[in-house]
Amino acid sequence: MKTTLTILLTGAAVAGLIYYFRDKEPVASALKRSGDALANASDRAKEQWQKVTKQGSQAASELA
Image (cartoon, rainbow, N blue to C red; front, side, top):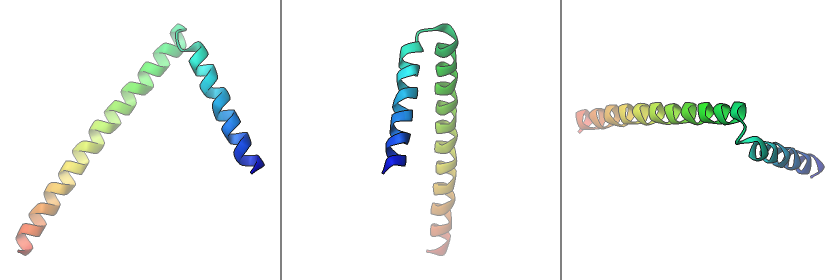
């Protein structure tokens, strides 16, 4: 329980620092880059999911 509380408080402190410094230029650019990286990862995951579902539907139609 003590460890969980420590982790939560540390996370809250980091989030607070990010919130406080979010308008500063280095932090703002880092947050933008991380947002772009997450968007790219999301797009790639969607593409891979579409490929897998397409292959799965083709395999299912071949079995039928």
